[in-house]
Amino acid sequence: MLTAALQLLAEQGLEHFTLRECARRAGVSHGAPAHHFGDVRGLLSALAAGGFDALVHNMRAHEAAAPADAYSQLVANGQAYVDFALRHRAWFQLMFRSDRLDASHEPLMAAGHAAFAALQAHIAAVSPRASPAVQSQRTALAWAMVHGAATLMIENSEFGAFAPGDTPAASAKLVAEMLQLARPAFDDAAATAPAAPSSRRGHPFPAGARITRRQRQTRGGPTR
Image (cartoon, rainbow, N blue to C red):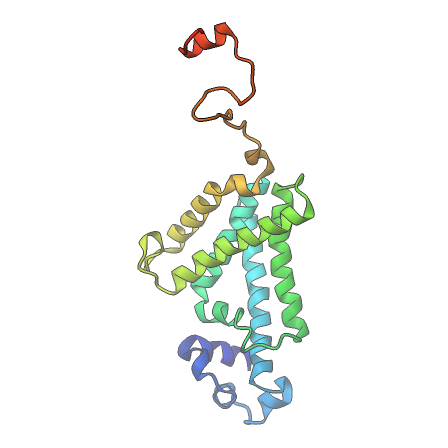
């Protein structure tokens, strides 16, 4: 039933998904889906749970092929997320359709939490000195970035780098570039670069600082 449901979802989309057609494709009686899954929401919830399981498997495969340092592992996790969305568009979209899924479906909740926990672990690894609240914010930011990129790609956006027709390699490169650009927002080490000196109305010295005659001469300013 689940195999037939996934095929039907990929071919016809969620709007034309019916238990009767799933049963026909699976070669079982019309009452069999209801017996095992309760209703269409139950079947779709089971299918979405399998999607999160497959997503986690894809994450582990990408991470295993990536360098071992913490930030490379975070980038690989994001690349796996987008890769899964591109390869399984309808499945990926179903996983976030709360209006069609059962929020109390335990396997779905467990699988979703496992996928989220993988990202949380990567953020904790690159932000070990951050408080739990900051780590939570950074996790939300990272998820929003990769989920937004995935959504733009699978919706065939015509805008710039998200244009349709990107290869998996090109998509992976884009995700890596995005996360490297945002690295100071996630990585404690990258975020601790020396700050630029403060200024007041363009003055090269902090407000309230005592400025010596030699400093003014060095800066090219007036000596009086």
